[in-house]
Length: 278
DNA sequence: TTGTGTTTTATTGCCTCC
DNA sequence: GGAGGCAATAAAACACAA
Image (cartoon, rainbow, N blue to C red; front, side, top):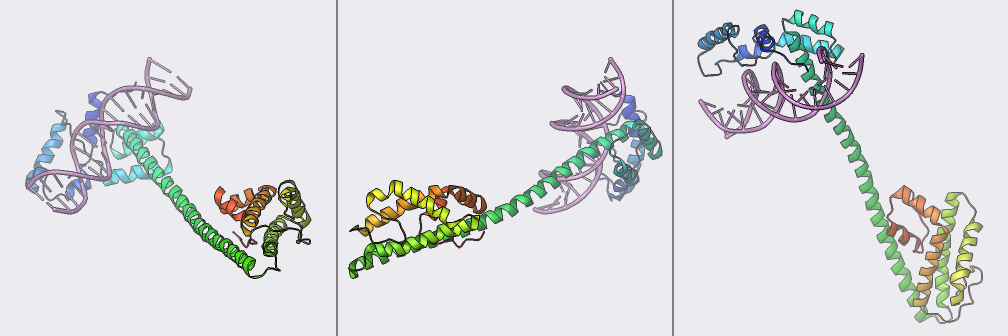
């Protein structure tokens, strides 16, 4: 344990210089006149050697400057350097050590503040980007739902007006859009279109063909009399099936665009080719 | 002038290293 | 076990608004 007796503390007090700041005071700390306060201070200085005043004295600006310079060179204090500095500045080695100790603590605090500021700046930048992407995401989702609704109404209209034109023909046209979507995704990924169609056909033949829905793009006349509601349900289930086939791309899209899971599912359930470039 | 917040000097207790 | 470092804290010195 390092402990310091009263003699060392007393020596530290004796060795202190009156600071510049002290000299600046127009009036003393007790409200006396300048001259009287100076006299009290000088008496206090003299009395230090006789009794423990218990008062702290700040280092002079010159002492602080010298200590700062030394700290700049090396923030740790070797015993030889400590003694040398103490002799040069008229301080006790213990005072020099304490000053370095406190200075290191202040430096550490400042460093933490700097680190915090840097991290906060990083966070703010990332958050800004995230918010921007989220806004884009919402706008696109809204646009897609509008297009979806539009397709539905268009299909209903064609069902009522033109009997020759089967409802499924409208479905097919929207299906083509959907296929374009998959093509685009596949092309973006570098694989062939036939692959996407293969997956698509497989999924559809497993699940949806039993419902009488033929997904062959070239032979789109085989469906008999499904209502538009059924068509829409089929379209939805087909999209889910297609979503399975493109799960890898879905994950990549999520990674790139910060899509939520729901948004991503919505994305694959609409009949429009993607035009997204994040 | 005074109350209050901040800075600086110093102490204490604990820990690690040799 | 002593020396030295660090965190927490006390207390004096200082700054400043009301």
